[in-house]
Every structure is written in C-alpha cells, then in structure tokens.
Amino acid sequence: MKLLVCISQTPDTTAKVSFNADGTEFNAAGVQFIMNPYDEWYALVRACELREALGGAVVALNVGPASNETTIRKALAIGADEAVRINAEPKSAAYTAKQIAEYARNEKFDIIFLGKETIDYNGSEVGAMVAEYLDLPYISYASKLDLNGNVATLERDIEGGVEVLEVDLPFVVSAAKGMAEQRIPNMRGIMTARTKPLKEVQPVSFDEPVKAVRFTLPPAKAGVKLVEPDNMDELVRLLHEEAKVI
Amino acid sequence: MVLVFAESPRGNLKKAAFEAVTYGKKVAELLGTDCVALTLGTVKDAAELGRYGASRVLNAGDASFEKFDSQSHAAAIADVAKNNGASVVITSHTSTGKAVAGRLAIRLNAGLVSGVNSLPSVEGGALRLKKSVFSGKAIAEYEINSPVKIISLMGNAVKPEATGNPVSVENISVSTGAGRIRVKDVKTQEGRVPLPEAEIVVSAGRGMKGPEHWGIVEELAEILGATTACSRPVADSHWRPHHEHVGQTGIAIRPNLYIAIGISGAIQHLAGVNNSKVIVVVNKDPEAPFFKAADYGVVGDLFEVVPRLNEAFKKFKASN
Image 1 (tube, each protein chain N blue to C red):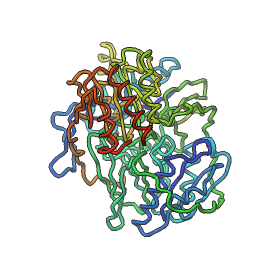
Image 2: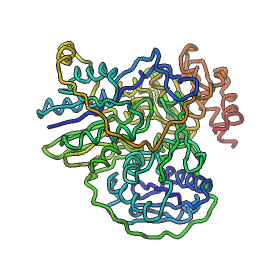
Image 3: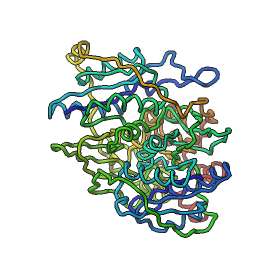
Image 4: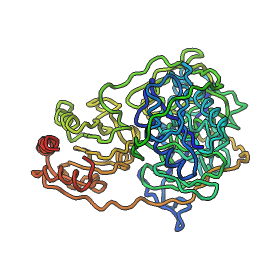
C-alpha cells in the first residue's frame, strides 16, 4: 500500500488576519502556522491507520519553502514514513495541483489523500485538479473510507446527507470530519520524525491563469443591538422591519 | 457564450441550479452574450431553467449521469463547452460543483475561482471576481486571464430570479468516458432544507444543558421554516446528529438569518457561520464572544427567552 498525503501549511485558526498596505500579500508577522486541520486530523491519520493495518508506506507531500519543515516534521511525528517538499511558494491552487500531479505521476500511489479544503483560501480545488491531471477518480468530502483488497468503500458528504460509493484503487480523496480522529504525536513519534527521510524536489514551471489582485478585510460589524429578554416582540419587529430577513 | 452546469441531484433541479443560471444570465449580459444551461441525466422540468435566464437548455440524457462521478461529469461539461465555444463555465459551489470545477479548469486549460459570491467586473479580456477567504475573515479579489474562465458560485450569493419563460429542452449527446465510481446508496434527511441551502438556521449549543431540552429549538425552527444546527460540543456529545454540526470542522453556512442559542461563539464556530447575513445571539453570559459577531443580541436565560421568542414569531406569522 503506497499512500500519498498532501499537507498544506496554513495560519492557525485563531490567527489575526491582516495584509500589507496595498492588500496584495498576507501579513505573516506574528502569525502561528499549523498543518491544515483537515489534512492533519483526517487525511493523514486515516492514511496512517491504513498503513498500520495493511503495510506499505505513507508519504507526506508539501509544496512550500524550507520554513515549512517544522510542519512537515509534525506529519512524520504523527506517523508518515517519509516526506517530500516541493521547493516553491504554493502561489495558487492550480500551481500547487500541478506540482503535486507532476511528482505523483510516476510514483504509482494507491491513494492520494488531501483535506477537504484549506482553512486559508477555502478553495477545495486542488484535489479535483490533481485527479484530472492523473486521470483518476476523485471522491471529495469523504467522511469514511474502508478498504477491502483493491476496492474502497467510501461515504461522501453531500447536501443534507451522505452518498455511499465504491471505487477501485487508485484514486484521489479529500477528507472531511469523521474519516479519522485527531492524533497527538507522542514522544517516540517526535524523536523518530527527526531521522525520517525528507526529500526536496524542485518545482516544474507553470503559467498562472489566475492572479490575486487584492485582499481586504470585511466591513466591521456595526456592533450588536441588544434587545431586552422580556421584549421578544421588539426583536421580531427588528428582524422584520430593519434587517428584513423574515 | 456563458455555459452553466445546472446540477440536478437525483433528477431534480434545486435552488443551487436556479441561482447558478440567474448568475450566469447576469454574467452573460455583462459580456454581451447568451447564457446556455446544461443538464445531465434525466432531469425533471429542465425547461424551467429558461425562466431563470437560460436562452437555451441542453440536456445530455445518458442514464449513467444519474449517479455522480466527477470524471464523467467534467468530461461531458468540457465537451459541451468546447463544442459551443463557451468563454465562461459556471458551476454551483456544492458537493457536486466543487468536485467538477477543478477538473474543468484542467480540461479546458482555464483559470478557476471557486466559491465566488458576487458578480464579476470585466477588465478587457479578464474577469475579476470576489470570494470570502480565511473562513470569512477576509475578502479576496482574483483576476482570471485565460481565454476560458471557470467560476463556482457560492450558495445564497444571488437570489434566483424567474423573470423569463421556459424554453424547450434540446437533447444532445456527449462523448464521455464511463465513470469509475459506483454509487451504491444515497442517504438524505427528509423534510428540512439542507443546511448549506437554508435561508434561516436555528442553532443551539451547550447552553441547552442536554438533548431533552431541544423541543423549544425545534419549535422555533418549525415556526420559521428553518433548518436546525448545533455547535461542535453538542455533536461530539451525541446530543444532536453530526450532520447538524456547523463550524469550521462541520458545515460552513451562509443563511440570511442565523439564530444562535446558548453558543458561546468560539472562533472555530464563527469560521463556519460568520458569512451569515444577520446573526442573532441568545446567551445568558453578556461576555460571550459571539455577541461581538452578532447583529442582535439577547442577554438572558434561553429557557425563558426562546419560548417568548417562539410566541412572538407565532404572533408575527399569524398577522403577516
């Protein structure tokens, strides 16, 4: 079983989001970076569980600069066997997908895992793009993945329910809550992570069809309007006449 | 022309498709061209898409499309886009659209902006589009420069406008590979509008003290025709089913009205709901962080406030 887990580095959920003066770049000063939670909690952990049950290897892949290696080592501490870093700024989903696909093309992975989206750019684009580059089936927002020989059974979150499906290896899957439980790396994992292989690969060139023009912060809320708890008629009136939502 | 993939889960066009066609019509007007809708599989009332602005409705009726496979769907949509010279392809930003849009971008050598929430501006041959990023904490504007452009449209971003007339459906055949995914079963909640589509959501948290108290929340949802949701601790304690969990790890929603009852408003919860148009918070703790993100607040005991609110809504509904 050869499993690839694509991990992304994102600002921590609680990070204060700000941009440079002309709104073209995220302001990273003072921001704590983490492994994208969906990649870590669900994709990586499920891949490790499958490797533990069936043997093989889990490769963690990150597209990013050398400063991402702390995040990559964490993936190794959680249980990935080896890691690859494609040495480039992940400029966009399309760029990242191209790098992942070019790396994975000749590696014959049985399953390529990603998280359902990243918590920074919220695109949910990379998985579908990688699958298309590699001509593989793609199952998005999977909350369950079981393997029986060459056949996987998955549940995929859809609007108001789940879809149950089967697919043969190999395929690309994006992981959602339910696929696995978060794992905290133990001391042994952290120690062995230091000596696990971390390979650096150079990126391929890519013509960017989309560019970010500007980032802005949403307009500040006017502030909460408090209504007395014994005057719910007033709240209903405000929702009807002022907010116009009922 | 602008091609809109109007998705039809289990043969039915839903709000997402009407929104996408309404949006596609407006984009087509900006570009001085037509909006054409494409449906896949056997679809009930596809002609209705004309009322939302499609000048033509194309249907590829192959029965294999009735089970979703992003690969065969994307192949078909790309085929139609190429054959008709589409300059913009629009999908909904749903479980279907998200799985298809990225594939279309590669197939059509096109730039994609996903989860767009407003109309584009036209800059020469480029389109500029806005979307919410950092889980609602920022807005990004992107420019697509490729000849073909792909847009996936966030739910509840435009209101469906049925101002036109139905058009007759043209049956077409498309070249697609057979899908490799075998859909075995689809389990959906009956009755209520799914959370990502809901216009009003009533959500409750740990302040409810236990699952046996949910009657007042259910009643409120019933009065408003709303969908019920809950916070993560509530789902994790199995007080409510997991599919009701909204927030960062759960479902991200953007209803017109979000009523949060007994939820403190941790940042992970806000990440999934802060795109709601109007937020009402009921909490007995005036220091609850949720009040900072709310439009309207009630500081009080939810077991007293919610029944009163239900009576007030009932009175309102009876007279409106």
